[in-house]
Figure 1: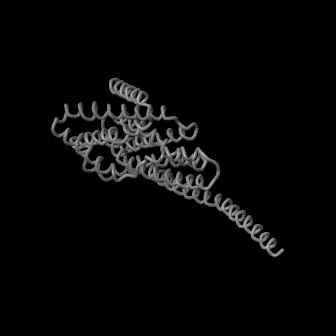
Figure 2: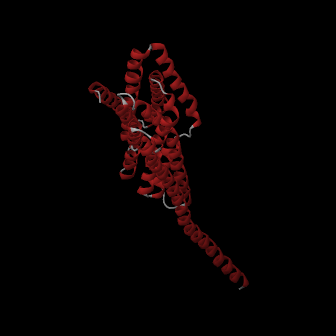
Figure 3: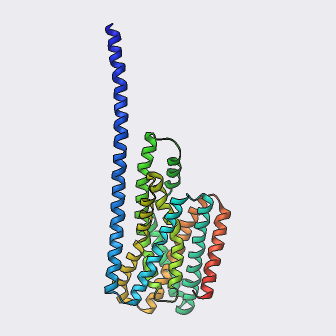
Length: 321
């Protein structure tokens, strides 16, 4: 009788402990999710506030040419929102992502080689422009290993899509949010020098072309920022806000270029800076975009995107847009 009573006690205690732990886990999980969403909301709100303040400030302290440069950089930066919309409306498959990356490669490489290098050296000297372009490529090659990597993104998103609401899946959600914020920070740092490029090119005839080329490049970046956040939280709003906020660093970069570098800018220095920008963009295509496109395992779509982007940029340069 004692034995059966102690057995009942143990058996009744054990389910109670597991049930209570399970209830505590379920009750604490929404709280943690709310905390993470609040943190993401705070980051996005801060970036939006900083961008808005920067735009308002620029209306009073810059002239018309400078405001035009900031406007172009803002348009290029907001292209990350397009990628965010694609990610939250319908997750792009590997074929579409390969084509988008190929298009970005074609657009950026063609602009860099044809306009920023060949045409530039014909007007400003072979040696100087070549050296400037090589310096730009080397600068990116030195900085690129310091940036966080994105290799885990696809595996994390696929892991989130499989399985039920168990502990490993909840851990995956937490890591996905962290990965999305990490991607936003990475793209924010990555977009700063692109803001420099748009600002400098705005003082030449290729300003809109440069903004369009970088904007096309920003679409896949918006996807890789928004995809993990949306997979983890199910919130289209937060994913889109974070993708958009990561692109707002481009007008910040343009602001820095106009405020600190423009006073020392000469026509020769401007062309050398554009050549250096071409070197950086070429290095981005070779080191970053092409390997990412190969990982999609659809080389045909990647090649089609490269051809499409190249033809698009060549036609744009031909008509002088």
